[in-house]
Amino acid sequence: MSRFKPAAHTYTRTTTGWWRKNPYFTRYMAREGSAVFLSMYALVLLAGLNSLSRGEASYNAWRASLATPLAIVFHIVALAAITYHSITWFQVMPKTAPRLPFNAKMLTAGGLAAAAGCSAIILGALLWATR
Amino acid sequence: MGHALKRSGEPPFWALFGAGGMLSALIGPVLIFTTGIAVPLGLLPARTMSYAHVLAFAQNPLGKTAIFAVIALFLFHGCHRMVHSLHDVGIRTGPTARMVFYGAAIFGTFVAMALLVRIGF
Amino acid sequence: MTAPRQAKRTIEIECLRYNPETDGAPRHQAYQVPFDDDMSVLEGLQYIKDHIDGSLTFRWSCRMAICGSCGMMVNGEPVLSCHIFLRDYYPKKISVAPLEHFPIMRDLVIDQSDFLNKLDAVKPYLIPKHETPLAAGTNVQTPRQMEEYYQYSECINCLLCYAACPQYGLDPEFTGPAALALLHRYNADSRDQGFAARSDVVNAEHGVWGCTLVGYCSEVCPKNVDPAHAINQNKVTSTLDYFGLRKLLAPKGSSL
Image (cartoon, rainbow over all chains, first blue to last red):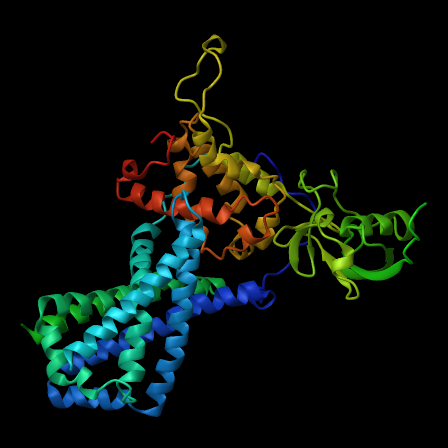
């Protein structure tokens, strides 16, 4: 449908580097970039699963690789990235929900509380299971 | 407009992206902290990730489901976001790019499934 | 007895200039504008046009953030120029440019035709199931039913959200924030039965699926329409529709 024709002799600007020009956009790209680290972590787990399937020696070799400085640094960066993902995820979650009868910020707070709760439960379960 | 607009194929991938995003938002940080920092550095006892414990977890039906869900959904979430990020930085992402990224997620999912079967009960 | 006149300060306003008849590309031109605390950026531009350079071209009308005419980029942010004050930028200089992501017609004036076509495409009017005669009386709507869509009806078509949206910048085929918010405004209106008529636009790649929830559109909207919410609610609806489950999650008061 083109009831309105474009004007003649207009100038179209480029969008190159758009995300560097506004801190809001840079934060958005960081949020999206967290997916790289999440994918890499999933591959780390997949590698671990593979090692696990090959027996104890192979699995322990995978564990040893996790203790190397490179691995530790990767996981620290990945933790920062996924934490940023988690916070921003619950911040934008109200936008995907229908109109709520309460303040959207409560949904965000609830989500973050759920994440904290799940973390506590998992850590607790691990400590209890390996006591 | 003379022609009908074609329906986008995004919904199933967006749904998987959403599931992976929710799961990783809830337990991603604690998983990375535990497996990648706390246990390797000794903040949690080493036996938390001992072969015996992890094998028992992976041989348990619920454990299998958990491991499968984490790997598969994290991969689908990551690949969906990454292909869109390529578009954001100006790289054209047509059907080929989508096939590569979602294909990688599907492949990873099948590998995880096969390994979990191999690990047995 | 009047209060003593404040001595006028001067602020530098740099404008992007473009004359399609003489310029190959846009250029910058800076002006020194005397101002006081009451002056909006729009009034600064009007001062330039009235006293310094009559050729400076820009749109404006109401001077009170309701007509949507005076949208432009000020220091890289999409704003209504009548809605922001020179005093808040002083002593730094102000850089004024036409709204991002639209072709420049002249100086600070952009070509809106693409948006107007997008607006046509979303069928921004009530579509009843059956035509009812005038004698049947007016439509009836409860306050609760009006709440479902009222926020989205506040849109003044100022296009700040399009200037804010990187996805529209990367691909102008994207229907865009305001058009999709207005689409939702009608879908959510209990008097409307046009959901099916608009679903092609919603479900298309350039419909709601062109949005990656950057969210900046809702940040810059001067009327708090929250287009990001309008669009992303409909990702759920579109997904259910994809799987043939649309009826499970009908917006309250709408027809599905």
